[in-house]
Image (cartoon, rainbow, N blue to C red; front, side):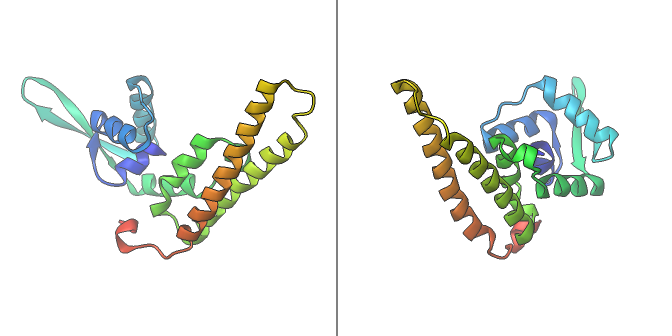
Amino acid sequence: MLLLSRLAQGPSHGYELRRQVEEATGHALSNNSLYPTLRRFHDAGAVSRTAEPQPGTPPRHVYTMTDIGREMLHDMLAELPDELAGEAPEFLARLGGFRFLTETERLRVLDARDRALTRQQDRLAGFGTGVDYWSGEVLAEVQRRIRSEQDWIGTLRAVAEKPLLEEEVE
């Protein structure tokens, strides 16, 4: 998702893609995950790859998103299945691509994450009795983080309900 989101902004070579993803998310990509993923996207028809000659070195490959890739990206961003909604990286990857989604799709992703947080909160509500001080502190902090994220989701929901700006759909 992160790679396709970056390629949706224009063609790029692998090193530049890796740098853009890292700058946008703080998530470090290794070449061992980057290039096999780009190869799979290429094999699936989601990206095209062209060799760009460079003097004195092997050509570098420039990747461009195809219509299939745009559809694939949209489908990945628009769905946050319950089994993934509890995973913060899955939610954050989709949130970073909200510019590609409609209001309804944005709200559906936010709702899925909010439901997952409520499930976590409900599960934790039964814990804490008979635990030592430090374990109690951990549980309290986890619960505080859940409440904080739910508040943030409320803020995001208010923004997500606004119409898309023209530059967001490019």
